[in-house]
Length: 239
Ligand code: ATP
Image (cartoon, rainbow, N blue to C red; front, side, top):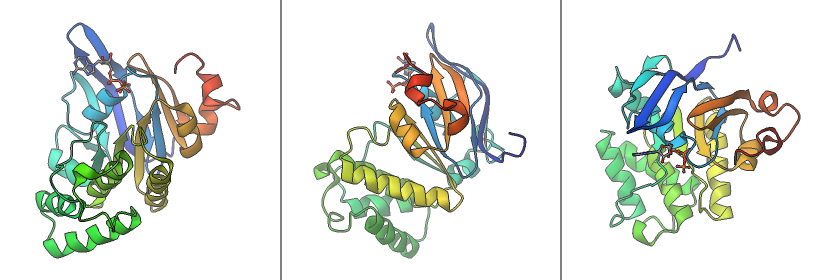
């Protein structure tokens, strides 16, 4: 573990909602270039952790570093380095897929010509070129996740966070998402996605962080964490 270059590291991350501790002292580590899975049952604290790590929710305690930069001290730098695909993806449904990408590009201050060029490339790899001028309201769940991922990748982030990206997605769209994400990590960038499905994490990830009841209960390279068993066997009863 000594030589790991970390894309994400939290220390003692803590969040309480009223009387309930949602995240109770989490030390999350994700090495650069990994395809990492944050796995755990519903209510384990995955969304709350990701929301704090991506700067959407203020922690009650703890530190968060992305590429060595403190998220809550340097939000501008961080926002340019990270891409986020939230779970309850709220898209501007009255825009077309292409308009949605242009709008996101404008929000990020990317020059128009560059946005157009990148948007066309992303629409193509997401297999959305034909649907690009249709309204997002008419998109399937898989298409919504794909256009959401395209929007998250528009500014070329180094670290990408996805909350349950495969939930409710048809198999063909899921394959496209996986291919895009694998290509992205092959180029040295980092993917972290949450899931309550152990098999999915086992199939895709080279790094895994297992959460339960607001704590990390195991973390490391997939092979080390599962120690010759399946993740389901190793964490029987969690999910
Ligand atoms: P899921 O897959 O169901 O979203 P999760 O692992 O992402 O699960 P969280 O959504 O982070 O878990 O929730 C952790 C705990 O915190 C749960 O018990 C949840 O009910 C609680 N919680 C999360 N957000 C809030 C909120 N805004 N107000 C009150 N409680 C919350």
